[in-house]
Image (cartoon, rainbow, N blue to C red):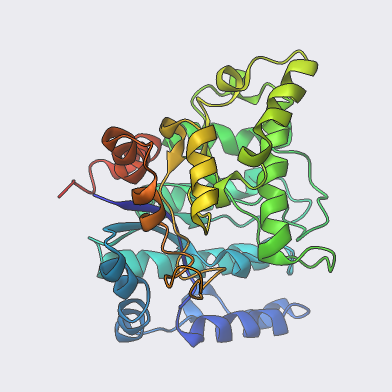
Length: 340
């Protein structure tokens, strides 16, 4: 079975954006804010949006199951206040739940958290519990920078985050570290802000003892880990200079990387540097890069073919990357989906 750990509902029906536009228009008048139940989308509209995009590509590319979450750039935690974020997150998560209900063999949910700049992460616990306990979600996306490119909140290793981590451990769910839209003109969203955040999160983990406090806490750093695999020697050296434990001992029981890297040399590097036990297959389709690579004639985000082409990976290593690691890191997935 091939499990794609990184999918977003980027093709949601237009009514979702219309709901968001109404919400934003009412920011100054709380009485006009639309409730999550105000989002009206038919099952047929959901089916059409999925069958002509994500499901179609699953079938064409030979993948089986996508771990699915709301559109990352749409989370926009910097917009409005905590109440805005909660209503928006509930609406988006409920829509993901409907996708997973309509296509239970193809999609399983991961939730958006109602984060807001300067608001303690404790505020997200209720929605995380609702999504896991009531909607059957198996993880969450955690934004290390709800300000949208200005980095105003404490690092992920600060005790500010600990109540949320305690709930993640209790529920036995991992988080994908994933920023949202950039409202800082210095940082292009998908070309800079996303990769900056991936790299920044890893460095935060390297410099602290978070995993001594939470030995079972699990994070997935997407987009191949940003700069991390390419500069693995730098991070090993920094850890050594700081008198930190070796990286394998310090982080690799808790930190994982996905394969949203859109060319063969990048995947070759990732799989040479990072142990196979710490890599999860992912494509992020339909996402940041949607075109065809003129050098190969294939879609950039058709990442399955890159893994298959890595000659030095054993059959067992590829099985781990395609399926085994996802089942281990998302334990709530195990009873829901069986290998075919």
